[in-house]
Amino acid sequence: MQKMVKQLLAWYQENQRKLPWRQDKNPYHVWVSEIMLQQTRVEAVKAYYKRFFESLPDISSLAAVEDDILMKLWQGLGYYNRARNLKKAAQTIIEEYQGKFPDSYEEILKLSGIGAYTAGAIASISFGIRVPAVDGNVYRIYTRLTECGEDISKTGVQKNVREKVAELVPAENPGDFNQALMDLGAEICLPNGEPHCMECPVREFCMAEKNGTVLKYPYKSPKKERRLEEKTVFIFEYEGKYLLQKRAEKGLLAGLWEFPAEEGCLTVEEVLEKVKAFCGEVEELELLGKAKHIFSHIEWRMIGYMVRLKKVRPEILADFTFATKEELREKYSIPNAYAAYLKQVI
Ligand code: SF4
Image (cartoon, rainbow, N blue to C red):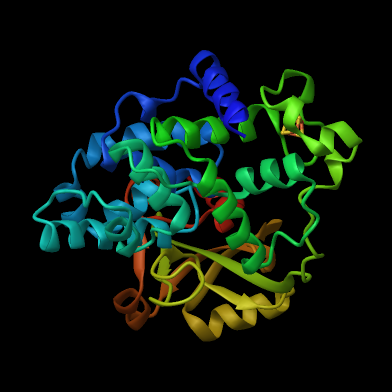
């Protein structure tokens, strides 16, 4: 095993990816990059990463940022709770650690939104602490190396793998070891399709490669089907502005701005009826077409209508927000789920 770790580290020295967040070991930078990378591809994260630090160069600016500005910086990355937790954790660091990032694995793990993987990445990369950073990439590599056929979606199995990987982390350069596994998972031991076993630095230790069983791993029990939800989305336009409402502070897409919607896919007649009852006189109704958005457990199937209003009830003007095209682009964070309709407006 020692030999395998050595080979992996040597490969990493030669082949590591040049990434913006690897230019230094500042824990703030490592932390934000890891959170962004949780659900987003490396190439897509690069632009967000740059923009984020231009606006929020240090932990105190993140702790004090207005929610709408933070959401705007995060728009397009999805899973907005990640951004909310970043801010919450930054406030904890200011209040409880005098603005200095905590430097023990256990303290890092206590911060909002930071799980074992992220705490391991920050602790090992920024502070040289000997802990693993085990995510889906590492589960995949480990189960292939050892031909572990247990269901990797089970927490007990994951815990076992984490413990085994923890034993492999070297005392010297633990951060390099964890980053080597990240790079191996991203470039060589790829999911689904064909991993590049011929280029793999740990090939000689890999049971699955030896036995031709690579694509059997990692094993996961079949997922539950997603729940389908049908929606009719209304883009109300009045005097060059568009009606927005804020989602509830809890649940899916909590606290973000959205176009109003009704359950079900409504016909033109049904839409006209709803609109009349809701807000005012319609000048023009335009069908914007169908769109869908897939969340982890839910799939939205949508139909959209542009509703140009001639007159609007005063209570609607008072109760809702009307945004210009520029504000839709610059100010309000509209979830990606509405991207197909937002694109037709701005
Ligand atoms: S030999 Fe192939 S399957 Fe085994 S760890 Fe390397 S890339 Fe993954």
